[in-house]
Length: 167
Image 1 (spheres, rainbow, N blue to C red):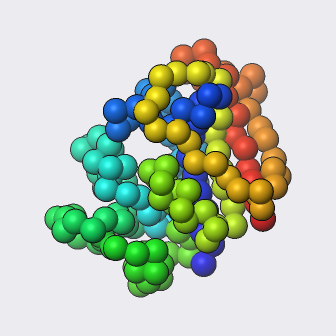
Image 2: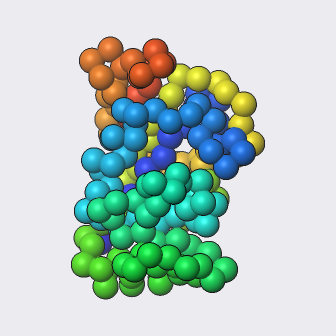
């Protein structure tokens, strides 16, 4: 099974602020995220689950797996687990060939050694944050960088890039 990380960060390593994205929603990055994760399983922590707008919870066309030690009531076909091994079993049981780790930062940081690909959107902003982005360890190699659009300009005039790391 392919295991990947996907997340966005600011140039100052901003990752989250008050359980939300510190730069707000960027529709191009959200589309990129959906294009990569649709049809697959996504693993997230409880805070990430709760940060999703209710209209997008669960994330459509994906098996949503929430890692938590708390009992949660989830829609049919979506699961809560207490370990990475359980998440892998759920993804396999759901006939998914890819598992994307989508957040929070501590989940991404602690489970990155399971992944073979990391897709990181770097947004050219240095905004206020209370959660720092995960740091990819030295085993990751930058494979590709491309702007989000021809000029790399987002909906709010902010430049950003998609970085792909592999090992």
